[in-house]
Image (tube, rainbow, N blue to C red; front, side, top):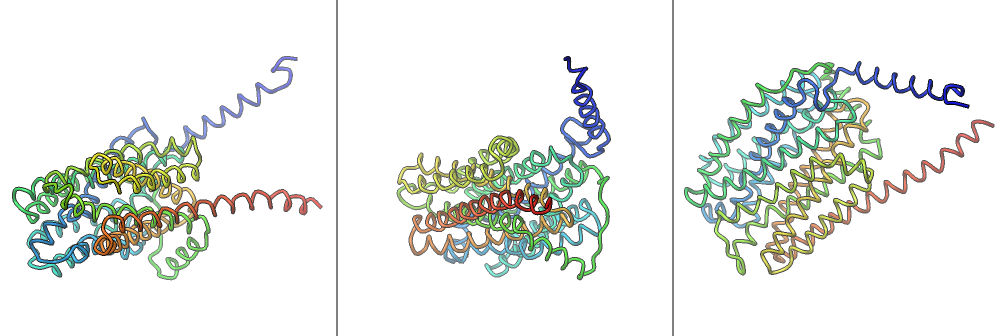
Length: 433
């Protein structure tokens, strides 16, 4: 009997036609479609500006310590204050984006952040510098959650991981270029001129972002009522999968924040004794993060979400252990692995948040970003304290504990999924009776 006789061909053709019809009726953006490149480049530039500003002092901490006469742990507050300000304000900013729109909030946030960035070089003392950095971090809070929500609304689901990966790649480029630029500029003209240059770069990125980002077509304004916000946040925190994703983001960032806050001090000391320009150039390894973040979608397709997280955690742990070697090439290889593992894990976890949340996506993303930057602040502070008391091995120890936390949480998620899969047939059988 031929396929036509069985009707199989007709069913397949009908299903294919239905799928094609559904795809063609979806007006959201997709790779190769109108507006997708502009959108990707605009958010890429927003990511560059965000991370360049947020971590503009990180590569300069030894110079700040020397100029202001403070310890490594004291100077680390110029990083922790910015990430802490972002962590505290990301949820309120997400609520504003639900009411006034993603593009409006992102544009306003960048405008305030770059203005503060032009004031940072004139800070007369460490307390003033820390205060300005806290305000800058609070302003930048409007970017991460709003960008993720914008993508979840304006991009087709199958392209979401890739689109978010490109935004995260912009983060990595911003973090890399900011540190490299500040390193070489500071070597010649000091840390104040260096952070001023980063402020000017961020101004250019902010202007280009506003000109390029397409107007949202699928945004529906929400409510600013506190009761609605509290209910939405409570719903997200009641979701076990979202709670695990938030914890994973925080732990990955604890590793990353600690390593890159302290690495400048380690490389400035014996046996390496590198000049500031070369220390800044170490951040070229961020290019690895750009690649790993942008390929996160393919990793998930091949290994599944939990498999990709295991790979990211394992790669990060291997890099931490390798960085203990008293050899510059091995330390650099360790940083490459840490960076690749972190950005892959972050892209996978953050995109999973957007897919999991069925409502209040900005709040769901904001909670992830809040946990993520709490991890950054904790990593910066605890990593610096561990370095002060136990050297680089102390910082690595903090990172290894955080990676073990990622593995434990991911394993618990796997076990929970298996239990649910096992319960499903039992529930179906009981219902049929």
